[in-house]
Image (tube, rainbow, N blue to C red; front, side):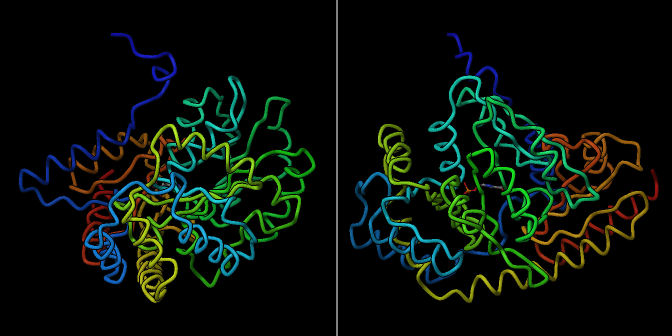
Length: 388
Ligand SMILES: Cc1ncc(COP(=O)(O)O)c(C=O)c1O
């Protein structure tokens, strides 16, 4: 049977090989430390789990409105107003099966064949593939480590063509942890607003932000920025709810939200009913779990970044958000895959190669794992790096 041309162009996740090998080694009883995690290691908070259980026991197990239950959409509007200073109406909100699904829907809704989408690199691996699946062309815009991996306005202006359909902004970023402050955003907004470019602002790591930095939503910068922006967020990272699969988008108009809604009507229908009830509790309930988790992540980040910067041949820009340290390994002379493969085989530490994020001179370490493992893994990397 033939595979569609559309899907043929989409690559398999190249990080899977390393992750699968680490799993296989662990299954054989080998003591592998993994820095690969893309999800918080904390349990989903008890009040959120209880809300989900209560919903199931109360029979809330049937189809819901395809774009999400009205009370959750209302709570999301309340969150946008309180946290981000953004005013949305429930009709502008679409709740989906994770932020990944929200992003997928947006690309499907706005891309025509050959449309270009500008993606700053390093980038989260799925953006480019989602753009391809929508018939679009990813335009990779390389940033510089010296600029904390943030896009420069003049480089952005040069990347825009008559085919540019959108620009993807991810702050705090996976994999670099860089955070755009208000001034950074205003500078790129000048370019994007003047050329009327749609912005897809992926704010999934919004709550995981350190050093007292403030998260600024691109759409909150001005009326013009609001009118161009899809704001994407979700529950996975902030509330340790990766498996519940709830994410959402806010569209700049009801019409655009309705277009995304039509796509969802005919593809997945509603996100899981009782996960929506649990999300209502997450957004509306006690927020102390978020602060606790962020505090713990900040301690780990300080420790990990400090250790990495004292190692031979390895260094990093201290991340300001998310839970990753993007390490420069260029001085070792190894490619990111070679480095990761050898580190796993010779020192039993699993990391993610940077090549799939667009940077073969780097590797990604996640600190979404306990402090004991972080210490053990870093000791091993340090000792191993000396042998190179
Ligand atoms: C930058 C970024 N955006 C979106 C997502 C998707 O999150 P989810 O679909 O779990 O809400 C992830 C997950 O790793 C991510 O790193």
